[in-house]
Image (tube, rainbow, N blue to C red):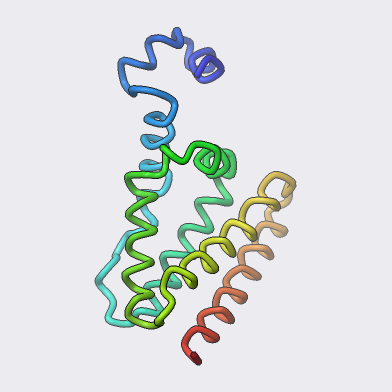
Length: 150
């Protein structure tokens, strides 16, 4: 909170006029960062396409904001709002296509994190970012094909 306040040119206590605590700040930030992930949710009758779209947008957000994602991991109480809605929507979609929706949800989300977090810190060139993004989409297709075959 202190470093954020310093960067904003305000006192740390003034931040608490807008959020109740660090977890509240993380929730507000994650709601803003991940807001577009559920864009168009429920509009497609094709569950696989919707799962793919949600996870691709989530992966993109994780790549763009790795520190926020890591901060949410470190503060379980920050897992609410849009991040909870994303998880709930994926679970609901997977319930329609598998008898193990929570297992597949965790596999697919962990895959997005595993692919999105480590490279984000070290990527300096745009073409490297594009390659990782494309590799993620290909491997996501592979996982969803395996899920469909079950």
